[in-house]
Length: 212
Image (cartoon, rainbow, N blue to C red; front, side):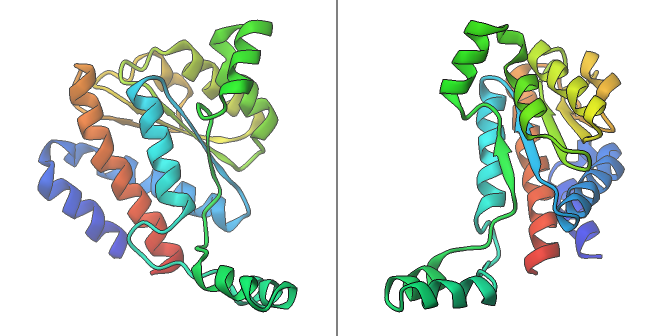
């Protein structure tokens, strides 16, 4: 019920997203189930969507709206190692949910672009990071960004669950997404304006499940 409450709050503020309620719910459930099974979340995009990928990771890897104390085993281990600094770390660190922004590794990206092909900078990382049952979120306002599409293709081949954030049509990437959240805009800035409340809602749902 808390999950639908948060989605309904989103729809109250952005009623044009009502047709995406099911996709948002199922995408949230997929991420939760992946984390429960020891999986991780990979995210990629270009330009403003790269910033959105970083943003999503930031909401998951530390507290967003909920307190996230580390578990007792880690607390005890830290305090056993160093009674002073360990205690500080135990009291101040927050439990993270494993998420990686694929556009954050500039050295690796430049190496792939130079040595292989700039179009595969994200696909190459899915090869290295991705395992069956993990999640890949690909963000493309047009749905036609080749490097995002390539990453989604590799993810499907490796057994990852794929989630797309796009604009109105979904573009070419929709063929490779298990869940497509195609907000009803076509202009890049307007698409991005709707992506933010959507992924904030997803992050809130996921955090609530684990730390509510």
